[in-house]
Image 1 (cartoon, rainbow, N blue to C red):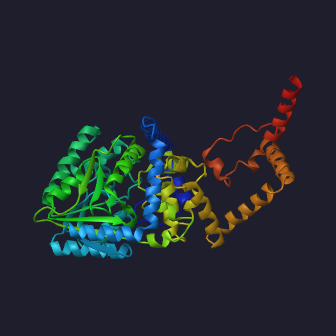
Image 2 (cartoon, protein in one colour; image 1 turned 135 degrees about the vertical axis):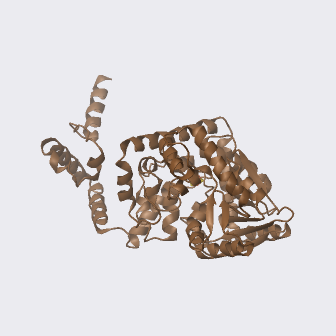
Image 3 (cartoon, rainbow, N blue to C red; image 1 turned 180 degrees about the vertical axis):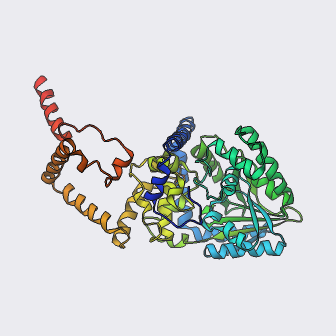
Length: 466
Ligand code: SF4
């Protein structure tokens, strides 16, 4: 497992580390697939599922085409509701704004509900350096925070942790009895611990799932009600959102809320979908609208689609690479297929490995509730990265070799025959430590012939029998 303070390693190296614990990999894989199947069952209960996806996709397209206007409409409505609106061009500005508001409130302890934007901006680290203690109140986020790790999944931040490990962690940090890993008991202990923080925090930060341009309100979805408790007890509410979270009208929520929960966990609806429109009497409310590379992405025809993401996590749950390499292997706040297309837009050099962490099977695109063409963008990113010189020499050479073989049927057939011969008579030439596939797998028995030969032979036999 990685912590933010460790030097960055690439996806393959981090995935290899995760793969050393085979039992964890199998269980991680199965748990996420279980959620993917729940999502499928939930989607099948709604005959209009595909219509909802199409409607959501079109609404988000409209938002991206008119983002400037919707943002100004949202700002004006929010100000009319008594909310202070801030604009941040990048992560640094966002962190400075949040810090300033906390300073003005004169506090050093705050609570925060789940917000992937604040992860993207590394807000906790920033505030920690300024002497402010941030307590993450989502249970999964609190677990990874106590462990000194970033979340490994956008909806299920501690999905890589076993309950026994959480029991040990709570024993160390919260003083629960050693060896008690009962989920209900641990949840109760976390509730007690967090309640103290809620009661004493005068500033609460939340993320934003949807921001309605028509009304200036924001909607925050949680299963634990932690955002509501934090905001209701605090004197100051700071809501942090990426500028792409806008939806035009309140009635659009009927589409997005139905898609979000079903795609994320297979639930019909998130337990709490809380609307925050104006500060209550005596409270102040701030909304920080963050760009951080989003406007630049809006201008890139091939990649702007990624801004439609509603952070449901379905593409992660279905991705065979994510399921078997773990969220931390992506070394970015947002892991999985969507992270692999968002991260290089922010820093091509740092994240040039991520678009290659995919089989391009297209399963992510298939489940995405807002119809983002994720696997096509992964493929497009590879080409951009190769053109910009961010693909390593060995990989480039390998790809050139593959291209030369695949473009020439005769050489392709000959290579297949040679490969089968070597695998049979000189297996150590293929099955050695230099072959990364061999490290994790037992090689299959060598086939007698190529599929093409088998097909020709069987088709001929089939034709003779008829
Ligand atoms: S890309 Fe689609 S499937 Fe993945 S998190 Fe975003 S909305 Fe969900």
